[in-house]
Image: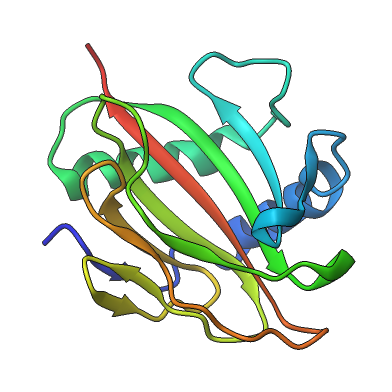
Length: 173
């Protein structure tokens, strides 16, 4: 089954390592910025081209774990990272969080592992009309370029937030 939730994706030690990276590197990066029209903070941690707009330095062992998991789950021998994106939805700066249903762009098939890093509310992810409720440290799998995905509108209070890290892989050619 392509669309599945995997509970407690990282071990406690791995999660602590990830939290240290997110708080001390990603959140402090000049390349982690506001997207007011989408009600979120947004940053590209790594991309296929390793551009200067990337936050970078994502822990290799944590990425390798996601890559090995994606290869096994999607039953593809060799995947390579296309991008890693971190997004935090909240009401800071007058944000109105939203994630309309969409398919990811591009002609290349992208295999997605949607990892919920941190939250204090429930805001289900919708994939092909099915809702998936993630807890922190859960991962959801889907094919972003082929499956309609997003979230239904939700009212956020001033304290509410949801933060996810999206790992997108493509097949090696």
